[in-house]
Length: 62
Image (cartoon, rainbow, N blue to C red; front, side, top):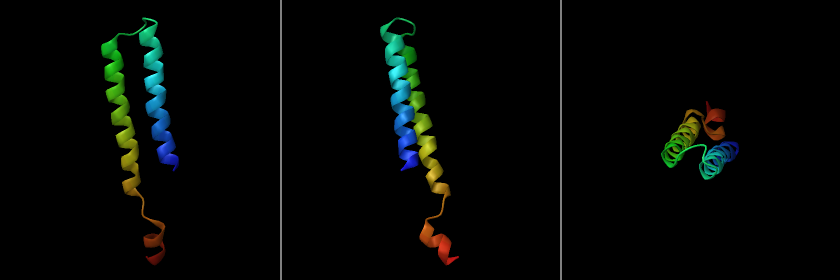
């Protein structure tokens, strides 16, 4: 659950930051689109960390 919370926070945080900066004119739309793509990559890489851990049941048997 912690990983899911991290992913949601990363995705919504970056979207919020670039939404505000695009609306006030500090960044362009294309930079916001690139940031959204980057957020997707970060969230995906963060989720892939879950594949490295062993479930508790398997760890107890070994």
